[in-house]
Amino acid sequence: ETVMTQFPATLSLFPGERATLSCRASQGITSNLAWYQQKPGQPPRLLIYGASTRASGVPARFRGSGSGTEFTLTISRLQSEDAAFYYCQQHGDKPPTFGQGTEVEIK
Amino acid sequence: QVQLQASGPRLVKPSQTLSLTCTVSSDSISSGGFYWSWVRQRPGKGLEWIGNIYHSGNTHYNPSLRSRVTISVDTSKNQFSLSVTSVTAADTALYYCARSNAAAGTDSDYVFRHWSPGTLVTVSS
Image (cartoon, rainbow over all chains, first blue to last red):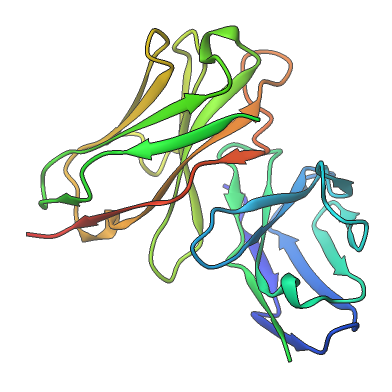
């Protein structure tokens, strides 16, 4: 199976700053990469799929990029409600697999 | 907007069978076009896809759990279910049901657009 590795484990930034979250696949997955946001007590929420396509209702400050094995989720102009765990997931190889997550803290 | 709700016993004894049911609202499983999955999140660990089912009964399972997992569908009740046999403490987790689109052919696109709230199942004697 494809192993997904996320870094950093934790990101602590001020409101208005840019967050850059990374995700690496153990083998090439072309653009079959999704990003989810999870807040405490809630299920994951789909943000991005196909590496760069925003899901319905997702603000434009969330941008996904990358292909092959290296991917990035950029959150420009962080807001307090962006505090959450973020998970990447490859959806091109079976079984689908998730990274261990990056926690974004807002100072 | 489709809604999913998982239900079932919250406490299961070791070696017994974990059973959960996901009830789907505002959408019909039998209409097709979607795959219905189970995903779990163990304490301190990431998310793990367990398996999925189509309205026809076609299933796919994670090889790591295949020998202990069965997913079934009851279109008359608009529900699908999960069964995990021979559970241990390692099966203690938040369990989610989720929906993804059917892709070309006979499989899912594995993009989970809709999720249920988590249901915590604890395996303990």
